[in-house]
Amino acid sequence: MNTLAPTDSAAVRRANLSLVLRYIAAHGPCARTEVAAGTGLVHASVTALVADLIERGLVADAGGVASGGRGRPRRLVSLVPGRVRTTAVHAAWGHITVMTADLAAASGQRRQFPSVRDPFGPPNALADDIVSAVAALDPPRAGVHQCRLVIALSGPVAEGNQDAPGPARHASHLARLVADRLPGLACPVDVVNDAKAAALAEYHALAAQDSAFGGAVAYVKSDAGVAGALIVGGRVFQGSHGLAGELGHIPVSLDGPACRCGAVGCLTTYIGTRGVLGAAGLAVDGDTGAALAELGRRLQGKDPRALAALDRAGHALGAALQSVTGLSDPDRIVLGGQLADWLPWLRAGIDARLGPRRAAFPAHSPTVTPGLLGADAALHGALAAGREQILTDPAVVPKLT
Image (tube, rainbow, N blue to C red; front, side):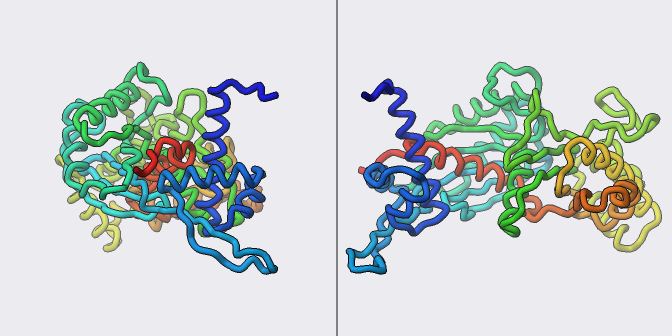
């Protein structure tokens, strides 16, 4: 006797639909018998679920292959990547970047637009800039389902809490403002933390490089501010309040520079863009782009003050990484943002701080590397978040008419 309530039955079907789509996305083209063996579902259920996915345009018949015996050829099914599209927006200091991707994670359009908006400033103005950037993209073609608009933003983002205070409330309010200004978009708008999105994307890039990789990753980036994230077991470790991995306000000196948070000696005062530029003797008026370019020239020219600023930053970062290593024991520490570009000059300071631990625990010391995805890491992470929504619940994609 079936004791499942109707709502339970629907939930089970959605879960099984997700299971089948994930298998085909990872292993296709494949036969229904392979899907059944790989998912543990009975063949009749797989046949019905595949038929549902075909009706939604998410998978398609991919022809037949010989069965290897005297039976009929096996009919293969494969993913239809272009059926859905995710749009990601990275709102950063000085610019807004927009990128699209399909269900196979293949990137499509990418556009960058200048923006003078402070990501922590009035959300109405930032929403206007985001809407303008998204509207500049070509709309999805007929038959393509726009599944998600994902905005990657600096600062804390409350998971499922629309009434969260401070910057988290700003993020949820921003999502509503953008949705209201894009009535024709007809898809949900999500806001994610850009460092956490970037960290997850870098983790998967590392795993794609090395199929045996599966350890914990600590991610640190520096641009206008300093942010970070921890990836444990392939998932972002949020902590109790979503702030796990945020390194910007770890104290690295008891008598260091005053920080805007009210403390002294915070990591951000040493490795944040303005802190490094100031230590190198470069004034910042408005956009930091010109000052960063000049810092790059001075580093290449071995300017003593520029080199000293990066060495100071490297020692501070190394001190923070000592704490991260002791608390979370990551296999890899990935540097993003300006830190990836500065790593050749930060390395000596980092090694000086981490050296004693490496000597004591040579088999358990993390590797420090630049990110693989560059400035677009947060965009790739945001696109992956949109793709995950479809893989989790394929039923949100309407059936083809």
